[in-house]
Image (cartoon, rainbow, N blue to C red; front, side, top):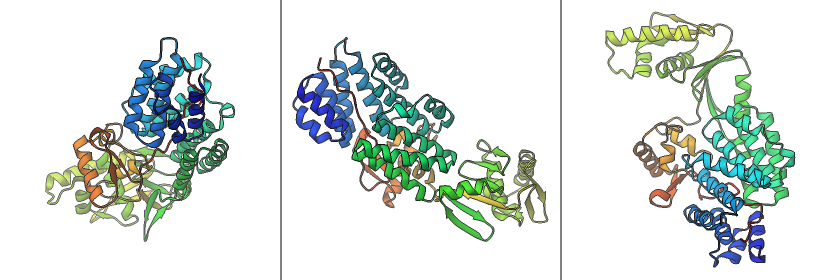
Length: 408
């Protein structure tokens, strides 16, 4: 390995892409192309970075399988940051196996962390936890240890295990400081801000207020009867009943929960559940059917009784009924929720069924509407256009090739 390649690799590992580019910006050999690609990714030019890494992967010879695998890992991280959720996970897994067999355990661990982060992003928490359990974090270098703890914290926050989340963030902060990589320290800091950001809205008789994640955890452990609009479940201390696939039943449950202990007029339930402006006998018959179905679903948690005006909810065990709603509910709340992590998304990625289940055009109209009100902004053009809620788009994750690339 020549000295310029080695120096550029060390500069990237230290989070200094400009220093790396100074050494390899005019070179077109495979190792230089790979390092230039990583540097451009760290600077935020993801389109150029991806092109350079692909050129590098093609330029490496048949005996340089490790170098090609590292390029695939780097390209996979660019795809993750770009929210290109269709990138080939199989190619990343193949690259990870190559790296493990050739002894590059650091980059192999990085590849596995990318797999876990993707699972976390698309909400497959059980799979992410199983994959994470294969790691011994004590053996990881500081940069990867920080990344590992960030994933642990991300899962814990989604599981509402706030003690675990805070402990993981503290470990991530210590590891990031040891790594001395500014971008990594900023990512840990940004993740920690989530703990002090309203995560939900409590609606109960005579009260409506925003809740932090810690307060949500406390509420769910309090034994209250909770209609959880964030997850579309109804629960108390012992039982959780999902209504994710039953939107009409959930709309009825929410209306009954918001009105408790009072009853809800039939006209209100018809408007909320069926959007019926002028109800006829068929609507009223359907309401009776759906209320019956809801009684069956919630029979272990609550009774639903008919009143003169409509229907009322009466929990069996809980002494209090509350509704847990997103902090903001408007026409485009789902789009804002996916942009809330501060990362940049393409409209096509947001439209994937695993995210919102909407068409690209529908999501684009929502983004345009949000941009007019200043809630989101975009950068780039065409297929490279990305949307974010941050004032300045940036490369939030740490893209590293910690092992020096061979010179060929």
